[in-house]
Amino acid sequence: MKNGDARAGRRVRAVGQGLLGAALLVAGTGHLTFQRDEFQAQVPSWFPADPDVVVLVSGVVELALGVALVTQWRQPRRALVGGVTAAFFVAVFPGNIAQFVEGNDGFGLDTDAERAVRLVFQPLLVAWALVATEAIRVGRRWWDRHRH
Image (cartoon, rainbow, N blue to C red; front, side, top):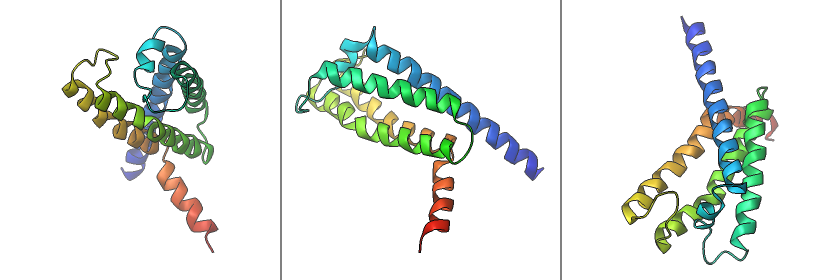
């Protein structure tokens, strides 16, 4: 029974990885096309770059991460992609915070309460990337083998 549970867990993680990759492909496409203005609302006013450039670059990164998530199934590459994806979600989190603090509307979030609720979901995305790709487990195993 334990073997069946392990297989089911692997399947759930694989589906989660594929869904996250697909979501990033959709989001990256939105960055480059029909949602550019909405994403620009998330670029903090204090960030020292043109908001449109930030949106375009982050869209390209999201597309690359999406492709990597839907094509990398072997460890340790799979875990590396998960770790990089989680780091990306952490890196863009200040944009979500800025949207809340600055009161910028975007994606239909036009109240402080709606923008605050959105902030809760970014850590969930980080966890999703790490769990679906087993990045923490694989990283710990690598660390244990390579520390001196």
